[in-house]
Length: 126
Image 1: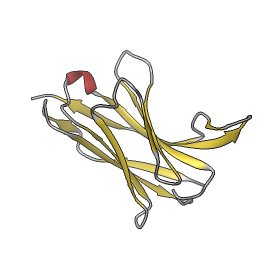
Image 2 (image 1 turned 135 degrees about the vertical axis):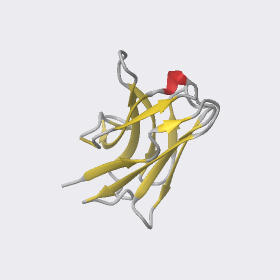
Image 3 (image 1 turned 45 degrees about the horizontal axis):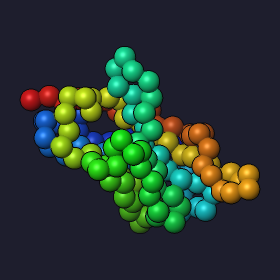
Image 4 (image 1 turned 90 degrees about the vertical axis):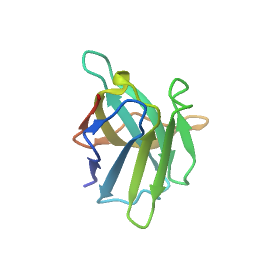
């Protein structure tokens, strides 16, 4: 059974960089049928997909966050990480990491997540 666990500071000051890590157990992040996602849920709003890092290390980001977001990985630790720069209170949310399976229908694509971490609250405040 795959398990994901987010970790990182719960409080970040405005203009600083938010950094979170997701530790994966029960499966390798380099397995070729999956990508690894970051998704957030601001209070009172819907879920927001932020980006993924695929099994081969390639990354894809939400256009609205691309200029401030970076996703990387450490395969030796089976972890992947999120950084969001120049944060504002609008970045306050519960942040989730998740696994997205790859599917094929004429082209390969990644489906909605099948395994999620429990989520971690990040508050941006001075």
